[in-house]
Structures are given as C-alpha cells and as structure tokens.
Image 1 (cartoon, protein in one colour):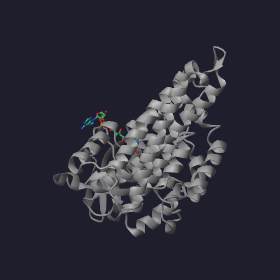
Image 2 (spheres, helix red, strand yellow; image 1 turned 45 degrees about the horizontal axis):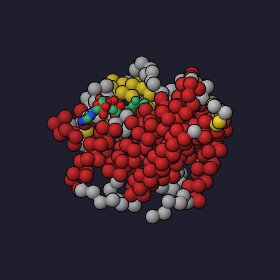
Image 3 (cartoon, helix red, strand yellow; image 1 turned 45 degrees about the vertical axis):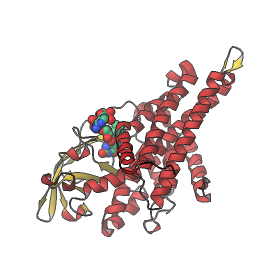
Image 4 (cartoon, helix red, strand yellow; image 1 turned 180 degrees about the vertical axis):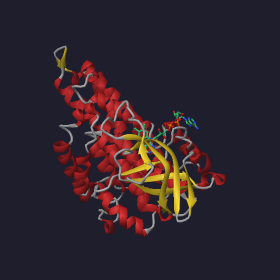
Amino acid sequence: MNFDLTDEQQSIRTTLAAFAEREIKPFARQWDKSETFPREVIEKLGALGFLGVAFPERWGGGAAGTLSQVLVVEGLSRYDASIGLTCAAHMSLSTGHIAAFAAKEHCDRYVPDMIAAKKLGAWCLTEPSSGSDAAAMKTHAVRAGDNFQISGTKMFITNGSVADVYVVMAVTDPAKGRDGVSAFIVDRGTAGLSNGKKIEKLGLHASDTAEVIFENVTIPARNLIGELGAGYRQTLKVLEGGRIGIAGFAAGIARGAFEEARAYALERRQFNSRIADFQAIQWMFADMATRLEASWVLICRAAALKDSGKPYAREAAMAKLFASETAMWATTKAVQIHGGYGYVTDFPVERYMRDAKLSEIGEGTSEVLRMIIAKSLLRDGYLPV
Ligand SMILES: Cc1cc2nc3c(=O)[nH]c(=O)nc-3n(C[C@H](O)[C@H](O)[C@H](O)COP(=O)(O)OP(=O)(O)OC[C@H]3O[C@@H](n4cnc5c(N)ncnc54)[C@H](O)[C@@H]3O)c2cc1C
C-alpha cells in the first residue's frame, strides 16, 4: 500500500493549483453571483492538458490513471465547485462513455477534441420523471432506415445548453426493460435538439444545468455507442467511475472549506483570544480533517481498484457516499466557524455549503449508494482491504 502521489501527480496538483489561484479564485464569487459559465477557463484547462490526464496517449491524453483525474476535479472544486462539476461531467461521463464504449471511428473523431476542450460534452440520462430509477426513462429511439430518430426530454443535464456533443440514453426496445436501452452520440446543431427553460439552482451557479429536448432528432445509425441494448449496462459502468470523480469534487469542496475556516480562525479574535485557541473550534478542525483524510483513503482505494481492472462498484459508492456527506458536514462547520460572516457572501464558505449539497444527490443519491453498498455486502459478505 503506497499513499505517496507520483511525481506526475504532484506536478498535476501544483500546476493546477497555480492555475486556479490565478484564473479561477479571483473570479469565482462573481461568476456565482452573475450565474456566468466561464467557458474560456474550461478551454484553457483543455489546452493545458488537464482534461485528458486519464485518457490514452493515442488521443492526446496523459495516461496518468484515475487518481490523476480525481486530483484535477478536486483541485478545481477547492476553488470553484461549478468548474469542478463541469469538468467531472465532461471527463468522466460524456468523454469517458465514448472512450470506453464507442467504435474506434467515433473515439478518433470525438475524444481528442473533447480532451482538448475544443468540444464540450454532456451526458443525458435523467428525465423529468426518472432519476434514481433511470431505467424508467421515456426517451426513445426508433430505427428508420439508416437512421435513428430520438424523442424525449432529459432533465438536470450538466453542460446541457453549452455542450457540442451529447451522449444520450434512450429506449430502443421497450419489451426488454434494461436490455432495451441504447446509447447514442448526438451533435449540437442537429435539427430537433433544443433546451427548455433555464434551471435556477441552490448552488453551482457557474455550472450550466439544462433541460435537453429531443423532437424527432434524426442521427445516423452508426452514432449508436457499442451494441444495441447495451446502453444501460454502459451507464452503470460510467456511473461507477463517475462516482470516484464526484468523491473528488466533494473532497475539493471540503478542503476549501477547511482552508478558508482555518485562515479565518487564526485571524478572528473574541474574548481577547484567536477563536482558533478555543477548544470547541479546534475540535471542529480535528473532525473535519479526519473525515477528509478518510474520504481520501476511500478515493485512493476505489481509484486503485479501477486502474487494476478489479471490481470497484462498492468501493466507488463508499467513496462518494462518505466524501459527499463529509463535504456537507465540513462546509456547515466552516460556516459555523465564521459566525455571522459565514452566512454572508463576503466569504466563500456559504457558497461551498450550497455547492456541497449536490454531491449528496448527483450520480447516485446517498440513499441509492447505501442500497448499492448493502446489496453488495449481503451478496458477497465483507472482508476489509
Ligand atoms: C446540478 C445537477 C446536475 C446534474 N447533472 C446531471 C447530468 O449531467 N446528467 C444526468 O443524467 N443527470 C444529472 N443530474 C440528475 C441527478 O443525477 C439526479 O437528480 C439524481 O440521480 C436523483 O434523481 P432525482 O432528482 O429524480 O431524484 P429521485 O430519484 O426522485 O429521488 C428523490 C428522493 O427519493 C430517494 N429515493 C429514490 N429511490 C429510492 C429508493 N429506492 N429507496 C430509498 N430512497 C429512494 C432519493 O434518494 C431522493 O432522496 C443532475 C442533477 C443536478 C441537481
């Protein structure tokens, strides 16, 4: 067991932090306030190679493994969780789905441009009436000669109104249930693809979240990803990997909350002492860091299992469950440590608290993750490590 980052991972962490300090930190509050999606920052991250760290070199990636990609999401989320989520959805979900399951022709056509952020991806699973029960989707795709025609509405799609490439799950054979779902690539600009009304959110204001509507969207049959009827199985695999990324997203927010609260507690004085000298405050830091450290151990283990080709669904679910609940808890404590200043927008911790909530909901709610973990434990038993 080796918990040291490689030289390459250290370098990703430090160069990304320098970028974020310069290009993200000074603007994050304003983007949140004005609900601005900073596309140019995503393009710079792509140009610098950060969005391809885990993808194969033949497509311009860095082949540096899952943990490296988590470090990118974590390092961005520490400063601006909206940018962290944008990149997590782009890398793990849309680009990851194409790279893992699409034909070589499609991988060559899309993945290099997506890694370089010349094309931004969105991954369309959730619908207005199907979330946790994703297989109950209504969007359907019907074969018409050499084409498929897709109709339906997808809900809460990250990058939904700004993407260039959409990975869309749709029912192709209603009689087959989960084995009747297929995945497709749809390019922005295809007739019949549009966005619904703007979705106003609790947090993550600089991340684009949109309804994506498909009205008889006609695409070539070759845009099917993998085999007909394999879309739901692909979805489960994509979500397993995505959950490690969302654990990193949560860990980044929690680290941000810790660092901001620590700086504040060392400065703020009450009763002639720094508030950092009060034991009640010190214990909050001890608990925040202990939970954060435990999150990282779970993340590292899930990432190592994934890269070694072993099953990792349970460990990814555990990492995401624990890291997300840690982020919600730690950001609440960070607001508490700031007192009244934590409740106002002059300090970033209220934004961190609003942003953290999504980590308990997206890519499997905490309840769904507990179901996945329990099912695996009752089926296979439990042996630590
Ligand atoms: C900001 C944001 C970004 C998102 N990005 C994307 C994206 O890019 N692509 C995409 O496809 N989706 C995306 N989503 C959707 C997200 O994945 C879903 O919101 C999530 O899966 C939950 O689905 P739901 O909202 O329909 O809630 P529901 O499934 O309706 O759940 C409601 C409540 O019931 C609980 N529940 C449901 N089933 C059970 C059960 N069997 N047992 C116990 N409790 C249960 C849930 O845990 C939850 O507490 C995004 C959502 C948000 C808010």
